[in-house]
Image 1 (cartoon, rainbow, N blue to C red):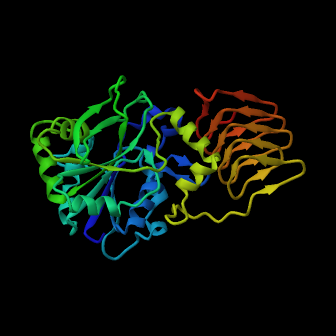
Image 2: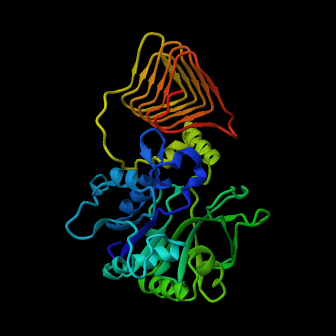
Image 3: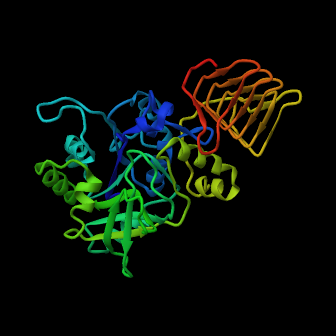
Amino acid sequence: MKNAFALIYTGDASMQIRELTFSRSVAAVPFGGRYRIIDFMLSNLVNTGIYNVGVIAQKNYHSLMDHIESGKEWDLHRKRDGLFVLPPFVTHDNTGVYRGTVDALRSCMGYIRRSEQDYVVLTGSHTIYNTTFSDMIEAHINSDADITIMYNEDDSKASEGPFDDLRLQIDENGYITDLELNNPKTKKKYRSCDAFVMRKDTLEYLVEDTYSHARYDFTNDVLVTRSKELRLKGWYYGGYVGRLNSVVDYYKHNMALLDKSVSSDLFNPEHPIYTKIKDEFPASYVGNGYAVNSVVADGCVIEGIVENSILFRGVHIRPGAVVRNSIIMQGGIVGEDSMLDSVIMDKNVNVLDNRQLSGYCTYPLVIRKGRRV
């Protein structure tokens, strides 16, 4: 895979995920007890053997940059190639505000042209799965396709929000014969995983040509609009795929980790998911405290009851507190005799004593970072 590099676009319209993205991009949202969403895509690329990775940022990217730093945790801290964070900047041609993926790619054209590899893996940042792209890249090289699109089988309806729901129709030879974007009544069961492989010169041509026609969205203005003139091929992925398009989806896919089949797929030891290391003491259970069917990260102190929940690093559940079906992010405190059900607490939230907070699985209660309730 030395002849491929990667671009991760993190400039999605993330404000739709409510309080979770008030001060961070979707890529930097915590997930699964100790990870960030971008950890999955960075790990997929590194496990593939791709060590030239560009991360395109647009807004609220300080938390993202703090997390990935130089890329050392993913073995991307290198003398040649490595990890490149590509934030927006203002020039005569670039206003610093991207109107779409094509606009963002064009602003990073210097990095793309300097990359020595011939093939590029282009991905988004709000979809999680655990795989390698080796077979997909090899299949693309051996085919006559202009673009290869990773997809899975998904019968669920499109989520409301800014994220593209791209559906594919595949023929018996694996070629894409039709595309639909954000159709709430679609009958197509194959759904894009937001990962594309193509030659670098193909990407350069498509970006410049699309931009010159005042079109700025890669999915709509390149894939859908030009689907008849481009040779598009599908690559099927059969593992677990989580699309974090809304708060409900975020909650659902976190809770899915309590299912052993899902957690073993997403955290397959053959393809490790790497993240920023933080040295913490092991979780401790004090007095009558216990946890059942939960993910409990290092540094937690459990003095109350935890059931069917995800606890990130350094969470403190005080005596008499009951936490059910909830996600408590780093540094969260649940006071004595408080009860939480279907709640998402962002980092460093302090719930005082004798509080009762409840949401529902289809509409969890979200508490913004640093709040005191």
